[in-house]
Amino acid sequence: MVQQPFSQMVNIPTAEELIGLAFSRSQRASPSIPLRASLLTRTKRISEARLRALCDILCAKLNRFYNSTPKFDSLHPFYKALLELLVKIEDYERARRRLLTSQRIIRKLTRDYVRRIRLSNDVDEVRNIRREAYGRIASVIKRLRKHLKLLEYVRNELRNVPSIDPNELIFVVAGYPNVGKSTFVDRVSSAKPKIAEYPFTTTEINVGHFTWNNVRVQVIDTPGLLDRPLSERNKIERLAISAIRYLANVIIFIIDPSESSGYTLDEQFSLFNDIRSEFSETPILVVLNKIDISPKENVDRCERFFGVSLLKIIAKDGIGTDMVIEEALKMAGID
Ligand SMILES: Nc1nc2c(ncn2[C@@H]2O[C@H](COP(=O)(O)OP(=O)(O)O)[C@@H](O)[C@H]2O)c(=O)[nH]1
Ligand SMILES: [Mg+2]
Image (cartoon, rainbow, N blue to C red):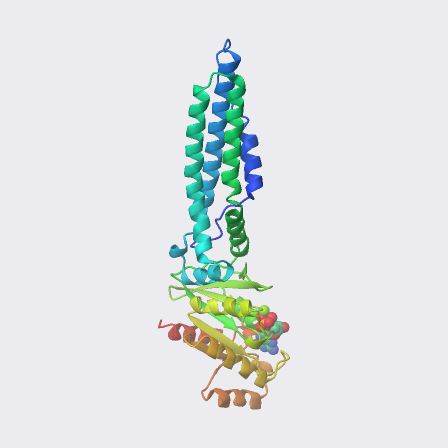
């Protein structure tokens, strides 16, 4: 299974936390000093060692942040879309670059101040140089404040979103609440669906998997996403939903003709129209669920509305679900 690009991001501290941590750790550096060394030699050696340690610790940290933060260009279009919703891409890329340039600045400052320490012949002067070096390095980190904050924000929002393997097909299940979406995903998945988060929405989404004639498929159940009219959504939710166009190979739209879910057929047709226009390029497979308790006239109304014969299933008993999968695979271009 391919790693979701944001799941591996390391925790990014605030500038103050980073300074505190690196400074206290660098104080542990203790160089070996000849026993009879003068106070001046001792001060110079310790100052140099701690300054170098500070530099190494900070650069190692910044490098880890950099390496664990995915480059925008390398992302799958779905993740690109989510990231664009969260932050300005130029800000994100600038934050990443600053992690590198700050390391260069810290190394240069360290070299310069180590040189000055070595040239000094006065204990107080050495202490002043060291203090100045610490101040300069701390302000390099302080200037990273908003960049670190932005990267940590991205990490928090995106580290639990679903992982998408670009080599797998993705079916996204849509339909009003209680029409049987989770039941369907549960039925067709070979293992218990995993829970993932979707940013900008309050609910979690279920990601199921199965393999059909060697084709690996992810089925995604999206409570809170494709289960009510888009007109009820705020702007950010709409954008978040529209990112699904990069995700779904096929949308499986489930209708409950029994209306036991609490939504009338008209409401369900209208949600379908909504999704049809939002995802104009994604094939949508309409499925009638709860056939065991649906009156025939309602089933007939559905078929009249769509003008075709529709797949009829009883998701709770797994009846007809295989046909749904076969049909969805055909729509995805796989026979
Ligand atoms: N009679 C009947 N009930 C079903 C069927 N499929 C699901 N249900 C029931 O419908 C209710 C809602 O199902 P759920 O999968 O949670 O719907 P979701 O909100 O769309 O995910 C549950 O009580 C299910 O047991 C079906 O084929 N027939
Ligand atoms: Mg559900």
